[in-house]
Image (cartoon, rainbow, N blue to C red; front, side):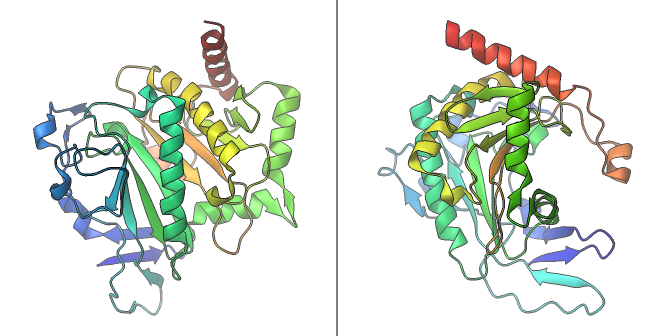
Length: 323
């Protein structure tokens, strides 16, 4: 049984999913064990080791992208009854949790993918996103990718996850309340300001701006935002998806080279149903960890100023374009 419980003092939700303690974990401390293809459930030829695919772009042993329900879901579709606590606020953890394996090759990582491959992945992600979002009880869809043990990756084979939730996470609520006020988008204003001051821009193309956010929580954190106001992932045009693939192709190899075996998260920040937002993608390198100060205060200590991070990305991208 999965269950959401809301902290009455902060408004934050915690999802309890005890079945996930049984999921396989292929990392010993921070260093990966040497797992081979013949032991990996996500490798080509091992299709029967997972739940049946809901999408596969080729026959068994001939696919490039494969999507299937998570075997250890954080949320599930079964009716689990109604919450019983009266004093507290809770919600049944009903929803859909899917895994998208983005390569059949064991050991290949997303920073190696060309733009065309990234575009195919984004197109499939959007297709599955729209399917999950269409569920009656789904209020919010979280798409994310964990890269490396420090970022929470448990299976080494490259993959994404999509989770449809019956609640809107408090962080999204806060970003909406501060970012969207009476049809006035503060994200759009931020993009205009960053374009003017030119201090925290990491990269730019026709449709997207990549910035090191002014109050970044993580060293070398990057946000990729569409220049046109888009509330959800589903609103991105095909041209914008192509431009996003181009941007990821520029930025991700630079993140991967920050240090050996760096861990990072890719998180899509989406608009909930019946709510306006400015969709964007966050890349969060896991350099340094949470300690007592962060856990007690929810105030992060960052050792790299965003202006320094932006200069790093900007310089690397410019040098690559010249070569």
